[in-house]
Length: 240
Image 1 (tube, rainbow, N blue to C red):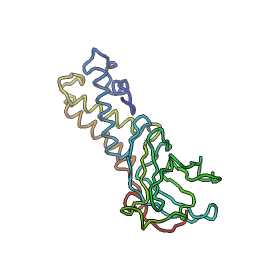
Image 2: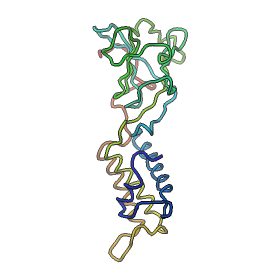
Image 3: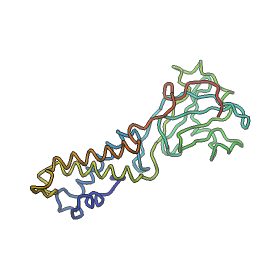
């Protein structure tokens, strides 16, 4: 299902009539092309750009960083590989399995989640969805990293996506979809004359514009700017 742009957006860009069941290509085919373009944008940017296109990460291996805070004592912090993320919810299949010395305990299923990092009364963990960070209260109490299997102190299953598609991502998707359509000379969508580019050249131009948009807005291969160990921060005592 197309989420980043509509078939009508592509038709407007190409300056053709809206796609329908009787056009070439049909509206359903164009929607498939949009899905393909969205998947490519996701791959290029290492992210998903609409809640309906959220991508699930299953059992991401992370390490818990111990944080010293005078407000709520020592706590743990996990930096996930992707951000923003959707709120953790057991009904959506999300899990937060923390090693507690003898077994992994799923905090989503068995602990109390606060509404924010400042919500400290009788809460066990909090999630900064925008930055993809999970905070754990009093992690030092059961910080037995040496006994964790393979040194993995936690596994996290979560979904990541940006809630609303930014305009540049929408435009890049339109360009990539138009490139796919224009690539097929048999479609006769792109009128050609002695003074115009052929469809193949136009297709390449659309492709180049999509890549320029993603590059200029620093969307390509989104990654954390800080160094990380096996799926998360290296373990150590730091300030918040």
